[in-house]
Length: 494
Image (cartoon, rainbow, N blue to C red; front, side, top):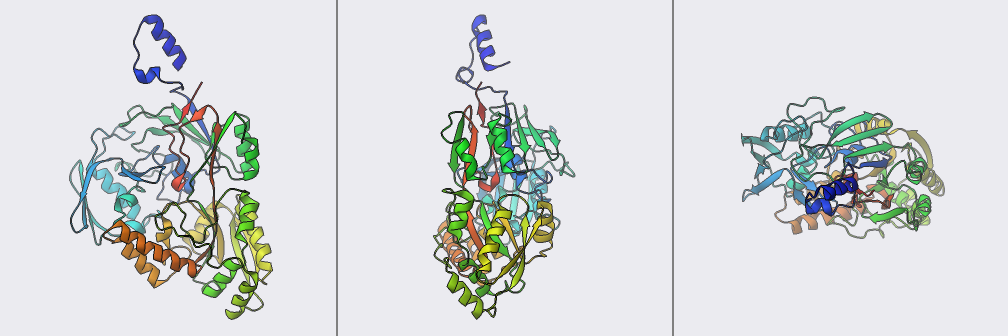
């Protein structure tokens, strides 16, 4: 029954309706059709599922003890309250009452323990596994209490726990099924096409403002844009090309919103292998890259130039765009100093989806000017995960990194790019054990500067975060931190 029909029936019957219902100008049972380029590889975020699983499942199907909001703050979610010991080595969490999984099982401390151990397990492929490595014990004195002990202070523990989905400890393989506590449960998943989320009527919190959400997946941006133009979808989570915006900007049938992004386009080197183990080579390539022209060619007037891996939304951001600024002659001189006066040749493993192939061609042309030959090897997202992330079998690669506050990856010498500066490793570790946020910011700001001076990677630009929707659709997140896309507040008017 629609809202209009409900109101008419109530008025004819002389029935008083709640103020919340009277205030509705949207269909509470609407199907929200979301268009995306990022289909999950599977449904388990500890099994290399890709960024699409964050977009569809974070906060929608699964919840955590804490939630990273679209505004960037960290707030309690499944936690009623918590306290830390004076030495910062023990955290005690009290869980909310009345929370159930979609299977009907109640949330207990055993589920929390199980979920954290899934992320920290040896077989886990979670990018946040190392961030939780200070956890030495998890106790469950009763069903509502979780006690976590640490080997060292972890000022980011609540933040890091926002990445840990709370999964029913009775669940087994969740790569194709789910059992979360969120406002939606998994409907039909047609691999290669669409994934449906249905409203969970037993949800412990505030009910969603729609009846279901359907993520429809596209392999190229043009098809995605056409789907919105033809009313096949209601909203696009992230526009991938400025060329398409002219179709929507100024058109009253659509709403265009630009938010804050954490997605970085990165030329990552394997710093373990020659010639990328030479800082002068890395700095030369940075100076040979006209990033302003690249950004303009991809995004026009949108997007941001960054001189490091840290976007302006992170507390330890500092403008480092002046480090290794564009200077072709200086790049040539550095290559000669590094022992490569005639340049060199390398293979660039490039994901097969936009904008990576275009970026690869741009870099190929740029580096030819300094005698460096780039061989482009196009690979799929699955191949990238296996070859680059897991096996570390590459020379250089392109990738977009979506994670919030992910400078900590440079403090891990075992990460896929192999950057290993002991000073940075120590600064990242000391920042995590800091006694105050001010101390944490100070140390990570210093680490940020060192990483930039080392040209550990080539940070090409920060994506814009542009969401486009039909004009009758509102309430969607606009910042997309970590590529998450909370659907429960989306409203669709009739």
